[in-house]
Structures are given as structure tokens and as C-alpha cells.
Image (cartoon, rainbow, N blue to C red):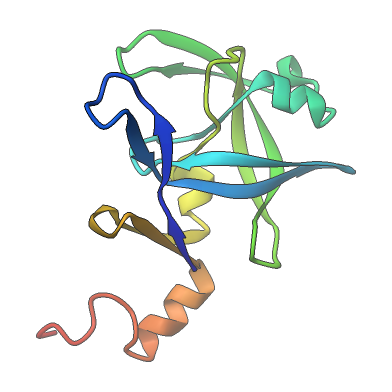
Length: 155
């Protein structure tokens, strides 16, 4: 599935916006479910969401496994790990994902390597202003049939 990058306002740039690989997903815990728009971030180790989202889903956030994160400027940020169900909009299956909920409302939900990239193949094509997402199973089948990236290039 190909998804276009989204423009978000950014007054620090001459064009007034920046492009981001944002993905619509559904997050579920027990019977509670919410759609969210999250940043697909291959540079982030973990999936990180604001604690308020966990509370809306009925999660006792502080009861999770404590984990300390370091932000881009290496400032420690405490978080709590929980497992939730995640479904990419447009796909039918749900996957279990470990998520860190942090006490910050100024964080955009992030889909990182551990959890999200374990289940999906993501191909960023910023020059086309789009990214491609496939289930891990579809990516494996495509590569076996010679339709995936990395085939037919002198291998």
C-alpha cells in the first residue's frame, strides 16, 4: 500500500511546511479502540505514545513496566511499557505491539522499530513524497516470487 507524505505547518521553513510519513492506525486494548495518526519513524527504537491515549484506552499507565528513554538531546524521559493491539488502516489483521506511554502531551505518536517494523516492511520514497507499507508476510512472499526489492540486481 502506497501512502503519501503529509504536509504539516512549519514556520521555520521557507515553504511554510514539512513533509512527514504519517500513518493512520487503530490501537486497541480490551474493548477500547481509537484511531490515531502516527509518525512512522525508522530512527526511533520504540513505539511511543502519550499517556493520555493509554488512559483513554483504559490502561493503568503507571502499572506498566518502567522504562527510561533518552530524547534526541539525551534528556531522560520516563515511560511505561504496555502491549496493545495495532491495525494499520486498510489491512485486516491485528498485531501485538509493545508501546511506551510517556507523560507528555506534546509527543506525536511514534511507530518505531521494536514492535512496528517487526511486523511491517516500510519503504520510504521521499523523492516521490510517498512511502510503501506491506505486511511482513506479503513482503516475504513477494521476495520469493522475485517481485520485491533486491531481486534481479546481479544477485
